Image 1 (cartoon, helix red, strand yellow):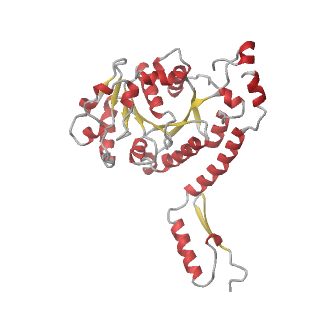
Image 2 (cartoon, chains in turn purple, green):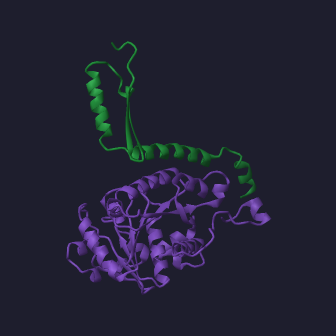
Image 3 (cartoon, one colour):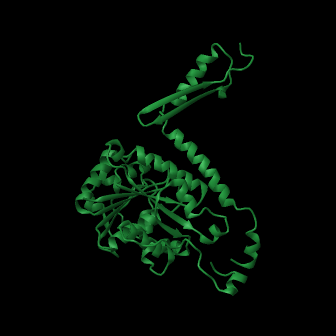
Length: 271
Length: 85
């Protein structure tokens, strides 16, 4: 039986697709057969982040409408044989997604896959609500910034009331916090909400902190999930996150700024 | 952190302001999240009925919904103007 994960946030630009791509690759690298679905119908971008934009033939809406089979639409990742990508459609039809259609796709995928990662669009429109409706686990991606924290809290409200689990009176969706674009130096200066602040407000289990990192942009430039950049801080942060999700005990990192030498302290340096 | 940053850090800590604002806002939004969806309409209709008899301001009426376990309480509060009769 597959576990369905939704990566959500409410606010746009906080790192949902980056996180979805990294985490699904991480799960696949650990030997779990994983499918990742882009729910951002009309504004497809997961294909670019995964580096498979030129291999898209059919998409999510084609499968829902019966114009293609699931196997025709799924793109097999070239770096990891356990990872498959289902791209979103570029249609402007807002009603292209149906709850029955999405339910059927997830049900079919669940027969073959261990993890299904649903990359939610921003906002609270149909794509976002359908991405979370069938979820077992929710990764709430949040930046240490007021509007992101507020929107995350709003998504928690929707997760707990408008999901299949809530409607059937089952055990609620397990919610985890992913704090991204974290800058320990600014936190130390009192310019940025700390991880404790955000946890206190949202009362969520912290799955991990992803530091603000140059490696995110270089990874997306080349269509490589950042987790494959093992040297980078962000890549390591996502590896830790996947490990913790799978039940490994990994202490939190990237909370404190790195110690610098005396010269760097006096004159500043690259951060 | 450079020497310059050291002096800059003496300025007010905006993160704590952010935290306080969020705590107030989130508490308020969570309270209204659990309210039934008919509440705002009901508030408007109640106001219309009261206005047939008394002149009251828009903010003179407050409707609060509270839930404690199985018990739901609807609290209606109307402030009459002092010279409203």
